[in-house]
Image (cartoon, rainbow, N blue to C red; front, side):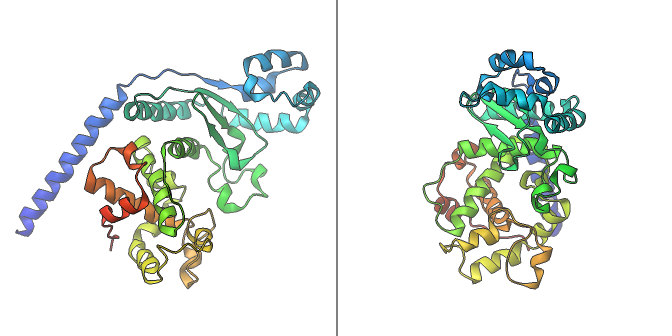
Length: 320
């Protein structure tokens, strides 16, 4: 095949793929969803002691019966709570951009899962509990907005920088999508490094499908520089895992080095400080994408596949 013919064929394939993607997205945009964003954070900021019964009636799921009314009244009158709520109110006056992106997410979820029901969406604060920034159930979506004020916010000064880096408005919808991905995913075994890589790879692939308007950097929670570093070093990262026989290792220390959130990945090489954390997740993502491209399997079915099945059929080859 001549080089010219090859280039023409390649351009035709890319054009056809883009055209198909465009048609699919137009079809998804026609899916009807209806919801409002209930601003409990604003209601609590404006509330007086006498308003507590009405708040409890409107949002019973936010008021534990084990907590006495006196505690809730103290919170209404607490100046630190007022400061937190005022910061949230200032940062999220309208919430319109976030609602637009939520609408797109719900359209995609409803398109791929005909049984999906749009949840009741409530914004609130949770005293900057960054381990529970967003919570998803079958009927509820809770968004703790005090965890998305921007990585340099004064409230986050005692939080590790690599965690605070993703405490910004652009991470609200990717975090929610992660919650949904966890609900849809299943895997019998999560014992080896490869198991964990592919499990988290499935969650990231889910984001490819459900929030295609977000960048790869936003999906994984990297900066643009970090995602470019991962892409440029895909081949040596993969070689390191293979040559050091890490893929089928059950050594739990590998998870801390390459899967869990961290300021950088730990190869124990000079390049460590240059690398982003969670590179095992990144490589798992590429494996799952390779599997999806080769098999053409439905996205939600992929989330139910076992790691070994995905790995064997993906025949993954890293970018050079």
